[in-house]
Image (spheres, one colour):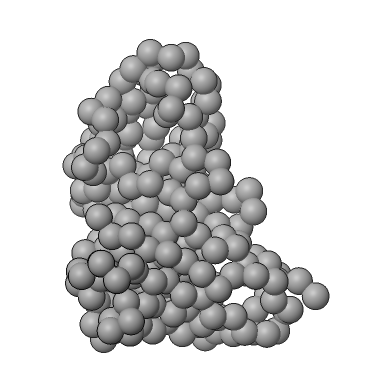
Length: 106
Length: 121
């Protein structure tokens, strides 16, 4: 099975800061990686697919990069509404797997 | 955009069975085009992928944690996917979400709101 490791597990930043979350895969994923945002008590929301393609309606301050085994989610200009937990997920092979999550606080 | 609604959660005793539903609204004419996944989240924990069924129900895949206890099925005429989990255990306690993807091995683009399952005697 493919293990997805996210870091850091939590972070605190100020409004306007640049925030970077890293996701590492135990096997080559190509670009079959998605990012999700989850706010407390809510379902996850898809932010990005194919490592760097933004879903419709997702602000351009979110940027994804990487391929193979290392991926990055960057938020440039953190906003109060960005508070939540972020997950990466690989869909290159079964079973699909998620990273452990990164909690982002202001 | 695909609007999905999860239902069927509640309290179930260990060893019993539960059936969860994922239903699209009548206006969702493209429901039958999508693979449907189930993902669960134990209290205070991260996301765990559970199962997927292909758009035409010819393929399905399960996580090892539920294999042998789970059946996923779909009825496209009713725009519904069912998840049956047998011999439930306390560790099955979680919020269960259904989600849609273009194919079974693809990004989970659209999610239901989740339905909570508690396994307790």
